[in-house]
Length: 133
Image (tube, rainbow, N blue to C red; front, side, top):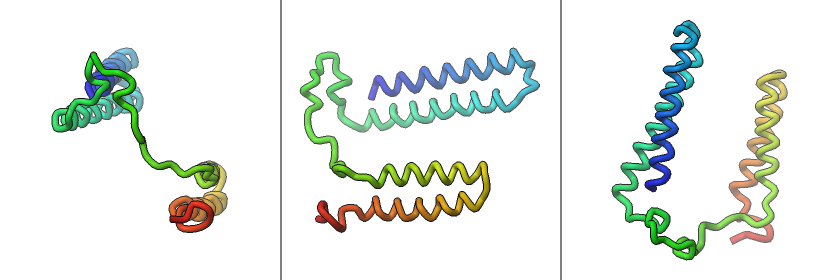
C-alpha cells in the first residue's frame, strides 16, 4: 500500500497548493473554488491516512517489495456474474434519474421505478435461472 499512500499524499498536497494559489489569484473573492480545492485536498489526505494506517496493520503485499514478481499476485480476484445485463439497466436507469433532476420530477420517478427493478434484479440474479445456486 506504499504506492497508493504516496499517490494520495501527493494528490492532497497538489490540491492544497492549487486551492491556496486559486485563492491568491482570485483575491479570495470567489470562495467556491477555494473550498472545492481544499476539500479535495482533505479527501486525498483522509484516503492517504487510511491507507497508511491500514498498511501498518496488514502484511506487505508483493507489489510493495522491490523484488516482487507479477506471478506473486496470481490467484482468484473474486466471483463475477457472467453475461449479466443488470448493470446495464441499472446504469441506464441511473442516467434517467439524473436526467429527471434536470428535466422534471416525473422523469425522476420513472427512472427510480426502473432503478429499483434493476437493482432487485441484479441482487437476486443468482437465485433464479441459469446461475441459480
